[in-house]
Length: 197
Image 1 (cartoon, rainbow, N blue to C red):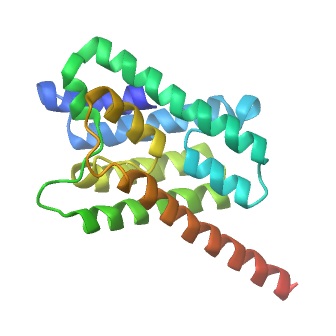
Image 2 (tube, rainbow, N blue to C red):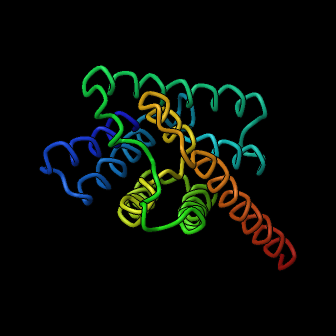
């Protein structure tokens, strides 16, 4: 996902042959394909915040949280290393960064909202198409504003290899905030469904 999505963002800046719509499609389709291809072997965990949310709601164990989150960060770093080998310093175009005219708090809010919808969609449905569409829409809306994080591993890998870490805490704290809100909504809905029975 990082190689394809961040790679599309690099190509967008490098040649302008790919639009923001193309970058959003690259992220959304890569997530859809991975979720469709990997559910039986690993549950298709691609995002540490999503794995944390699934652990918090009892859908995976603490051991899975540790192993999968570590694998996600390592995978993002390996994908970013490959991008660096191909594009060199141009990997900076694939990093997540808040637009200069947008502001830190606004960037935090956008990332929180996008992460909320992503995590809620995964908690309510594990359908690859639905999750892919949510990622696509998030990338389409947030791409030019924040570089579309929604995933701390996705943000960490390219930032590490481009040596650009300004405002990086936003890309960890905002997805966590969105995930906590989604978990709260999930438990509230579950509670009311039990009460109605």
